[in-house]
Amino acid sequence: MPRFIQVLLYLICFSDPVDFSRVVCVSKQINEFIYDIGAQSHLVARDLTSIYPSEITKLPSVGYHRALSAEGITSMHPSVLLTDGNVGPETVLDQLRKVGIPVVTLPPGSSLDSAELLMTDLGHRFGRTAAADSVVARWKAGMNAVFADTARWAGKPRPRVLVMHFGQLGNTYLGVTGQGPATQIIRWAGGVNAIDTTGNMQRLTPEIIARSAPDIILATDVGFDRVGSVDAFRKLPGVDLTPAGKNGQIYRIDETEVMYFGPRTPATVRKFEKIFHP
Image (cartoon, rainbow, N blue to C red; front, side):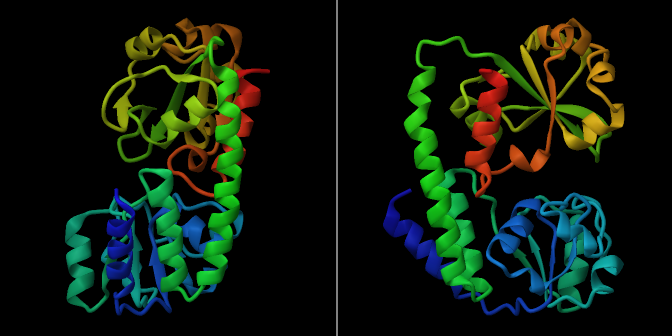
């Protein structure tokens, strides 16, 4: 996107007159960014999946972000509900608007540039412009160092990596696919996504897991913890037939490390480099 268009959209965003003094935020990414810029005193509640940084778990939860209730949110007397758009049901949002609680949607950054603009946007909304600028500057420096090092993987074997995420709404394992943050982070760390399909998620069956033949499995926290250990995870149907399962190359990660870009992304790339290329 041309820079002048980014700036225009940026100015439009900042014209929003909404009161951000008491915020119920139901987005992992936005909540983390709010803490990054030191604006967490404005938060009065979170959604169930917003667990980073750990201090946020001291806040009341209004439930799973795709299965919210109007009563749970209104009981917190918020001045605004803040979301990245991955929220529901729509009837609940309509109820909130009817009782005078605005719903503000800030799309998650689908690229590094747009994620950095989201951070800048939040800095303005919460009166933390300097803090946001400082965070973005460090973030850019970290990514520039990552980009300078990616040449090392040229011509070298790249392990096939499967990110297995447990979908709490459907109570099933999902493969993180597409060209989103997870695939990009895996690529920067010298790997390749074992599932090369469009879309962001694919429901996993034992057949799909076995056919993807990952050398390494990155299991996000909720799904891994349901099973309890690497030894138990490698015995899951389909996983047991993969090189990763046979060799015990299964690693627990936080879903927040791969579901969106953020200031921790450079550190996540370095972490995965050590796993992919010990």
